[in-house]
Length: 389
Image (cartoon, rainbow, N blue to C red; front, side):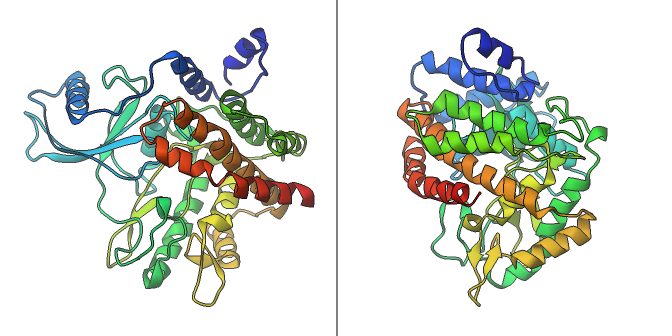
């Protein structure tokens, strides 16, 4: 658990029990608020940073070519490039994922890389090529991974939304759906204790740690980032603490498993990579299921029925998940995480995203400000949920 909780008590702030590395990332974000506004990295700066990183990795005659900024990655800087060096037979196509000073969600590139490497033998993920978790060589935290072929949505789809949300897979969805369910069931059943996950803490089995560590993480984000009080967010936090479910057997949790966060090849519909592991942690599998089932991450099928992540009806998804995982789903625990997921989204758009944009700590201030325009919908959803409970 994080040592920052005792430090915050000493300064008069509330104590939050988070994983140690999570607390360190939050401390970094707050400390950087005294720095000048974040400046977008030029191609020359990125190229020089990559050359330093790979030289530190022991490569000689490093050459960075075809460097280009990538779209997507709503709050991280991402670049595609080709790496050549004295020991390579052909150039490698790679992607750099690098942190600005603050984001909509502040996470650790070291944790993300560790989790990707931990699951790589069971789930299709990008190969990790290099990690600079504290920004020693890159100047800011980052990781480099292989560029994976594939698309996140069908190429013929029109009217794409941010991060693919609200899209439709069409006919290829029938091929994607079984893989989509299989991969999340397989993740939840992996033996994480046999994996190298040094930057992760493990909730105690048979305790409320799994839920409360996540509540504490986003409660700290709210405390650190909010620009004005919002009573419904504070009320919901209290409810989440008072009703935290016991998790008997913590497992690996992706944290952002949904439409738009996996790649697949066309026309065969094979999932080539599961992406965006930055929120991954060890916790309760119901948290992932609740997030996957959120209506805002689904789409309406031809018959007017809501499809989970644009793929299958809810009942089909849950039945197949139970069959593949061997787990028994507790609807009341999913209900708890439904409220947590809505509350977390409200914290992100009402506090972290708008604060990062307001203080010039991110390269995508326009996008982050745009996310904040959805605050009313998130708060309305949260108020309706709290009224029901």
